[in-house]
Length: 75
Image 1 (cartoon, rainbow, N blue to C red):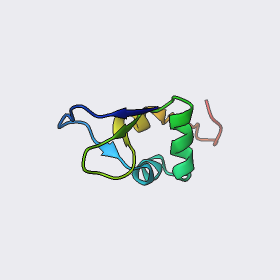
Image 2: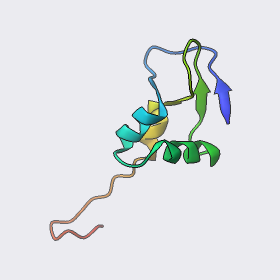
Image 3: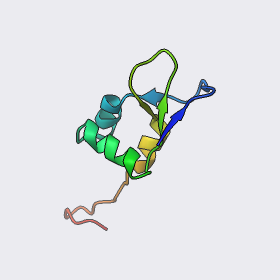
Image 4: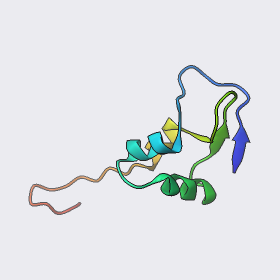
């Protein structure tokens, strides 16, 4: 779903799909498009920019941190 951005706050950063992929550390732009299609991430159309953007905080919320034991196994 694409949502036009009414008002941008100073503390929120909007990323291109390429920037979002780099933040995640793996994948392609299609990975972000799939997140948008599946409703996991909201996309935005910003004024005076081409292409869609996603909020950095939404992308960071997708990252799951798992603790790894010293022997290499996951908890």
